[in-house]
Amino acid sequence: MLQLPTEFINSISCCQGFDEEAFINAHQSNSPTSIRVNPFKQTQLDFTLDKAVPWSQYGFYLDERPNFTHDLLFQAGCYYVQEAGSMFIEHALSSCVDFNETLLAFDVCASPGGKSTLLASLLSSSSALIANEVVKQRAEVLSQNITKWGTCNVVVTNNDPGSYSEINDVFDVILVDAPCSGSGLFRKQHDAIDEWSLNNVNLCSQRQKRILSDIIGSLKQGGTLLYSTCSYSAAENEEIVDWLISEFDLISVQIPIDENWGVVETSSDRHRAFGYRFYPDKTQSEGFFCSVLKKPGALDNHHQVRKSKYENFSVIKPKEKEWFVNWIHEVEQHLITKFKEDYLLTNQLVIDFINKYPQLYYKKVGTTIGSLIKNEVIPHHDLAMSVHRSKSIQTVVCNREQGLYFLKKNLSSIEGNKGWNLLTFNGFGLGWIKHLGNRLNNYLPNEFRILK
Image (cartoon, rainbow, N blue to C red):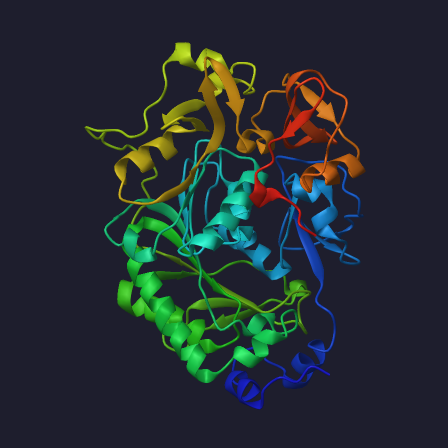
């Protein structure tokens, strides 16, 4: 039997919607498994998708947890394994943000990438997402998951949120899924119980306020802030929302919910601000909290950036673009820029942002197409995973066994034409191989390799 600390139970006993007996009993059952499909890579998956997550158009519950690591469609970015409660962000933002507009969005604490790929699924092609992660190793994981998702309008930065404190009135939407004490994950991650304490809750609350203070100036007038945690503690949830309203004059937004969902709408003590709690005894999810706030004023979502005198990233000339006609689908519809030796596929909003803020550390910008050696394209792994790649690229179709050998970097032979080939499964790219007649080279980056 999973034992929850008495101090923890006592600390959340006054939280709205809390039912101690039902809550403890729910922690004796297994966590539900849920996935969110990639709308840009729709295909038939190996499991039945007949149980929809009610607050997400892309979310589904699975009857059992398969071996995702060895599913080639998972490795190809056709879906993301995500806790169902977190998918509520889709509903919360869609109810108060017009995603048909050109928007600049900011995911502040973005790794491993679940909420970033969710945002990328909602944004228009002219919009852009800045996905940030302060920890270097976690930023690498974030970049990998963004690469698998396949869109070219996402930027990954590896900065402390304080690096954004001098950036003012830029973002239309900001998502802060804040580092927290993690009590909402006790059922799924039992070791998190041993790390929980009231002192840690207070430390997390202080850290959450620092992060929010650092980035709040970058939100436009009329812009939308979504704050979330996987904690049950009011000190990390409703009290933070009250603090945001007191400190920055933000306006609480009520989100429409269906009573059958089991989501608990809460009201903060000081400002009666709206919050949304997920309890495992009421919803088919782990613990989750979110609240949506607006900055006062009318939103101006015209993104006109004054050209800087020195541009690290400039759009390549039309003649240079011809090199990539056979590599990019409808290449004329996209912008290509160059950084060092690499050519990057992206849009104008991304280019304007990275030129305006060169002080940030950019881990990944759009989709890296590759480099040129003597006018021959050397394709990058990003392009293999991209939804923008040309359908006329030379491909080799693999079966499941061959695909797994490739991802383990053990594939020694497969039939194909000489030169660069995209290895595909069910039409989706896994990576590049190069046939050299009597042998082949596997160009899968080591960080994408399956080690199990």
